[in-house]
Image 1 (tube, rainbow, N blue to C red):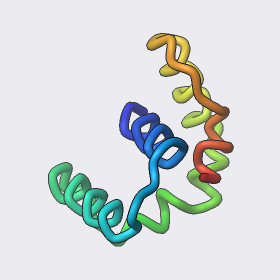
Image 2 (cartoon, rainbow, N blue to C red):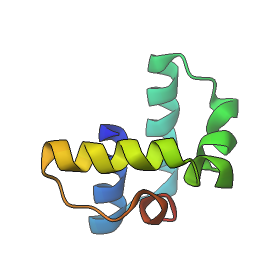
Image 3 (cartoon, rainbow, N blue to C red):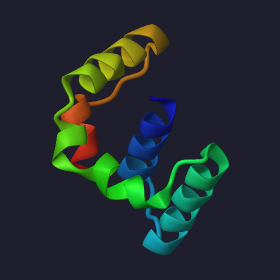
Image 4 (cartoon, helix red, strand yellow):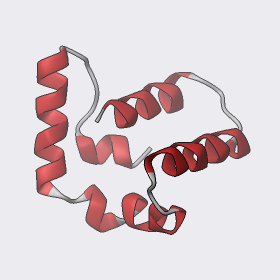
Length: 77
């Protein structure tokens, strides 16, 4: 959830270059052993509509005291 929050802040407040963000995501996936071919799964409608992830997002925000939109709104960025 922290990574998602970080991306939300970056995409909401900074001008960015897609190539740099893409490279950073690829490096993060490689470091975690997540296959890059799973990116469409993670960015897809099923992931965005996952109720369990939405609950985890809300819990993360509550626990940390951070302010951010609802999970689906963040995923729509």
